[in-house]
Length: 150
Image (cartoon, rainbow, N blue to C red):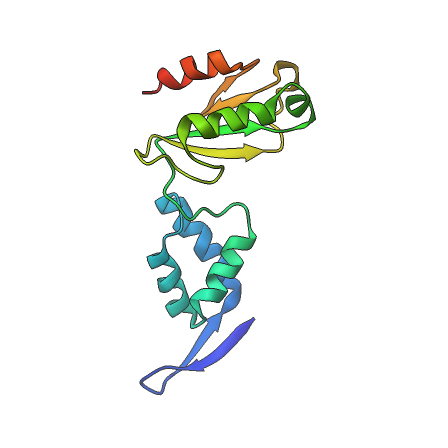
């Protein structure tokens, strides 16, 4: 939807609110996340409130509001992984890293995400760190895997 606004100098400015999501996607692609400064800048550019920008961005799971870690951990919680202990694996990771899904460790080493399926059901429970898949992960193995990234 194109909206006509008047600038401080009295000029008519045409703003397309349909640009909001592509702008947010571009910011995240460049920075890895959407900062509060970026939200403010987008709001000023599109002449909408910061709350509106944040409301749209927070609706979509693709957008992050914290800088990603150097290594991204994804825990599969699909049916096979859930049955084989995926939820317990996630709980162990949360305790070990002291973060929740969607957060980044204080040292910036890891971020944690829960995903619906990694497509490796025969290897359940499955964890992915960056592009590396780890199957049949146990708590003991989990600690060794994490130590290898330290």
